[in-house]
Length: 121
Picture (tube, rainbow, N blue to C red):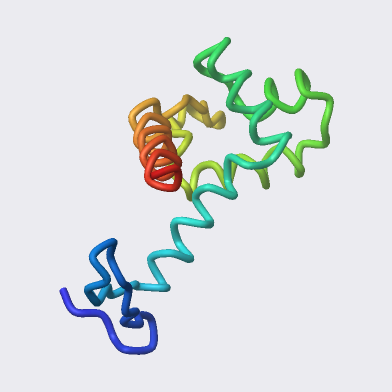
């Protein structure tokens, strides 16, 4: 699918043989990816992830009590993790249970490893 010119640019790069190649960068996708990485690059959200690794299935009440934060703070940070697809929700009556999306975490982990390896080349 073609993206509009507002969200992408073409950059000319020289390879090791000094030949010019063009790479199209979609800045909208870069912005979205950065938001996903920012979602886990926060101390409280990392604490939520760690807690969910240990307990596997918790409500917002259990999370904010264990982390000693306000309910609204826990809910805001869970919403960020949910939008980035790091947590999954399951409604049980009035309660929403949060679990980790291990597949998503693994995807991001592999992406970061690949990004760091490419950076060191």
